[in-house]
Amino acid sequence: MKNLLKLASISLSATLIGGALTVKPVQAAIVGGGTFTYTATPFQGIYAGGLPPEFNIYYFPDPYNPPEYIYDPLYGNVSFSDYESDFIFPSENKRLVTNLDIYILGNQIFADYEDRFWTPPEGNSGGRGSLYQISTGDPRDPGFYSFDQWFFGEVFDSYLFMASDGYFEFVSGVGDYITGQWSIEKISNTTAAITFNSDAPIFVPEPLTFLGVGTTLAFGSFFKRKSSRSALKKAK
Image (cartoon, rainbow, N blue to C red; front, top):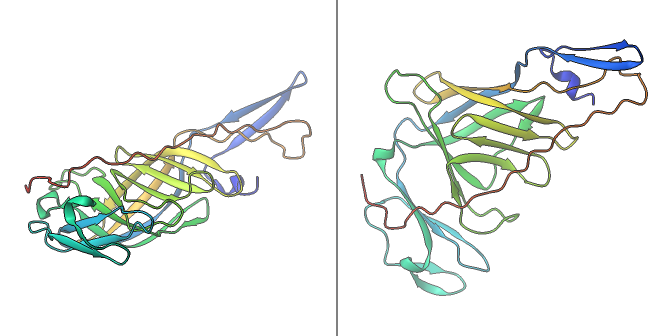
């Protein structure tokens, strides 16, 4: 509950009228933000992996010349075609995120086990750009995955989910549940600022000492969807 009070810009008031408690939320506002850095030039390369039981992930820098074989410690030389793979070409303008420093409701968001990419909006048109993520060997969910989104944490624990259309969903380890819209503003050729705006107030009865009143938060479930990008994706 005390984490919910960190939403300084969301004001909730309760009035006891005729024995009934009414809760009045006002406009939702910023609940988090921060910065991230990314490569100044478009990223390129090939990711391949997905063979059980180790699910090792391999990277090759030239997307135009995939290897014929990949050496796996368990199986030896394995044909490249036997692996799941994802090709990233310079023409896609994906920028590899090199550092993240973002928070929601005072919770720092940690990046682990995935490579994340941001595609800046074209020209000076503004906009948020688009997101992409490739698994690099998450032991909690082994396998080869790529998504048009960013995901941090674990589905059945605390997590942050960010879709490329601007929607985000955050669940903390103490029960905070926030949904809303994220936005990105380019600061320099290698740095951008990110902001999280809630789109639904959190209803909390007030005063907090009022007994017998519970707060119900709807839990939004998230299901990972595996990308079906072809290993033989044509170079743009």
